[in-house]
Image (cartoon, rainbow, N blue to C red):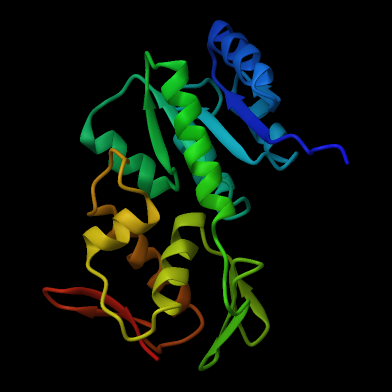
Length: 227
């Protein structure tokens, strides 16, 4: 049986970088999709890549804008390519739905290792139950979304990852650092404070449908899922 190639989207306005990365990842057996501006990147996203390398500074739409636009509709890992290293830029990227930062100039070996690590993390996800009913809320782990009275509530990838972690362990308290390590990984360059922003966004989306609190703040300790 022919093995299905992993699809990687490389979006960067520097043609030489796109060409270099295309040659490198094709030599590693990937199916490479490419784009040099925001419009092309959005078009390629329709082909459902398994992972995305996304330059922050692109003409048309920035990487951050593209990430925010697609994140509710695609769950694959998004790794930002950037020359920026300020903490505020990292926080903005994670809040937009990014999973990792690759700072230019980068090592191809490190980049491949990061890509492989994120892809492995995706395939390791498994669930004892594919659906959980929590009051009026239904969590579909296979579809990675929530339902209220059969109305679908879409969450960004990291938002659902947090719901998944907490709801699979109802009543257990997780502090920000532990959530960050479990969801973003030990080797990420971000800040655990981004967890609070993601939880705020989850609560805001749920509040459209119900006043019930599902994620409770345990002051001084962290967060827990209400049974």
